[in-house]
Amino acid sequence: MNHAITDVPGFQVGHAQDLRGATGCTVVLCPPGTVGGLDVRGSAAGTRQTDSLHPLHFVDEVHGVLLSGGSAFGLDASGGVMRFLEEKGIGYPTSAARVPIVPTAIIYDLGIGEGRIRPDQEMGYRACLNSHGGKVEEGSAGVGAGASVGKLLGIRWATKGGVGTASLIQPGGVIVAALVVVNAFGDVIDPKEGKILAGARDPKNPRSFINSAALIKGGLAIPRPEKGFQNTTLGVVATNVKLTKRQAIKVAQMAQSGFARTIRPIHSTVDGDLIFALSAGEQSADVNTVGILAEEAVTESVHRAIREADGLGFLPAYKDLVRSSESFSSE
Image: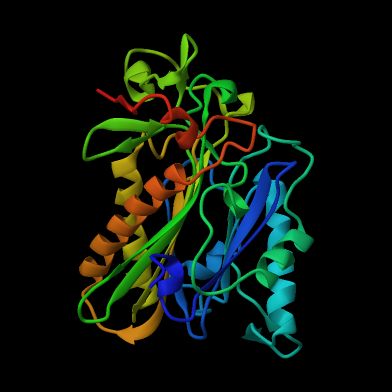
């Protein structure tokens, strides 16, 4: 197995990026019959075609999920995914055409590279051409190209974020996996040791971290969204357990605990955090079991996104900071 979301049979992942613009997109292509759900916790989410994941929406099947940089401009990239799927004859059948269902969510990364370079339809199409099963590139690939974390003091003192993936396989054959992009306002924490792995850096000692949550509790105000510190952490959970749409929504809700365990603060007024949950398979398991495994997969994916990130010459990454010193305590 590849310890990735592609361990769930039928799912493929593709990245496309522009490193000069420090932006990109990542597509998760779904096997036939995939059912999806969604849970949104942040107050600044940017999405497209997510209404189809509502339990009362009559369309049940999801054909792909796109995570894109470029803020709201990046929503255009989903058109390229739809074009790719239509060419493959994949989509919801109507009298005139098959219409691919591609729920999409975006992160804000315009402040890292050249902000006028954004994911578009061609980049979304290219991500589909690059899609495959097996090992998934992590770190500063695809939607992770321009991700950053720890922006309480502004982007100058942030740390590089990225994309990460992980899977959990049970003895009976149940598989639950996740793929996330970490572009958080808050700091990323190791919950076992209480240490900050990546986050807002101390201007007086840029190789160490401040404690964003502690400073906010002490009275330091969170910057207004229009100041350009927009943030979002996105996740996709996939399983081979057969779920209804309502059950998939519950799994997405439970998976959010993985964000809460690893990012502090999380789900703030300047974050757009959300998780998609996808079900494709015939395995049987209690929905609570799937939700617990999803939380664990999201937790590990967040840490892998940080540990595998590359600064790309824009921001220091975890790899850069640990070369000379260990992570600093969040206490």
